[in-house]
Image (cartoon, rainbow, N blue to C red; front, side, top):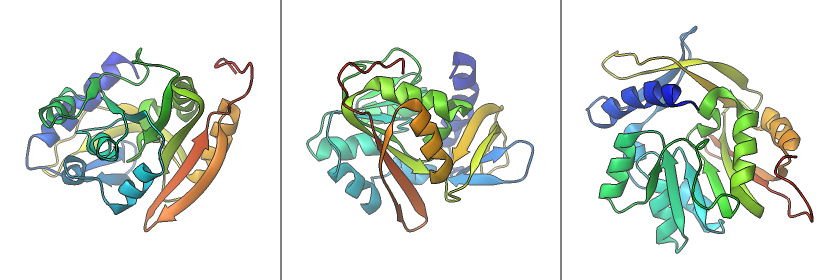
Length: 226
C-alpha cells in the first residue's frame, strides 16, 4: 500500500475512531454494496472466536491491520510475543496508550524481524489490504519463518473474489476518499495461496465468520522469491 493510499484510508478511519459514528461501512464506490465494520468491537476485547484462534498460535505473532490492537493484547495475555502493524496513526496511539505494541506503517514497509514471525493474522477483512491479495500473501510469506502460520478471515461468500475502489462511509453519511481493496472467499484464496507458495492447513466457520489457515513450508533451500 502506497503512502498516499494509506493516508486516504486512515484519515477517515481515524475520524470514525474518535467520534460517535461507529460502525463504518466499507463500500465498493461503484455499487451500493458494502461490509459493516464495527469500530466499537475493534476498540473492545477479542471475542470467544478470536481467543480460540489465539490459543492455537505459536509466537511471535504479527497482527496485520491490527487497529487499536485487541488481537495483539489477546496474544500477549496468552503468553505470546506479539506486535501489531497499522497505517492508522490514531489506532496506533490508542493501542500504545493501552500498553499494546503497534508499529505505525504499512505491511509493505520494512518491518521488524522479517522472516522470523511464527504467526501472522489477517482478520476483519484485512486480506483486502492494498487491493491485491496475491501481493499481500507474498508479503506475508516473506514475514513468516519456515513453518510459520497465516490465519485469514475470509469473506462470508466462499466464492467471492473481488477487487475494487472502496470508500469508508460513517454513520453520519460522511464519505472518505477512495482506495484499492479486495474481498476474498475461501475458494479463490486457495488459488492465491498456492501460487504464492503457502500450504493450506485448514478452513473453518464460526457463526457467520469464515477462516483459513496456511503455512509457509519448511523446505530445505526454499527461497522467498518463489
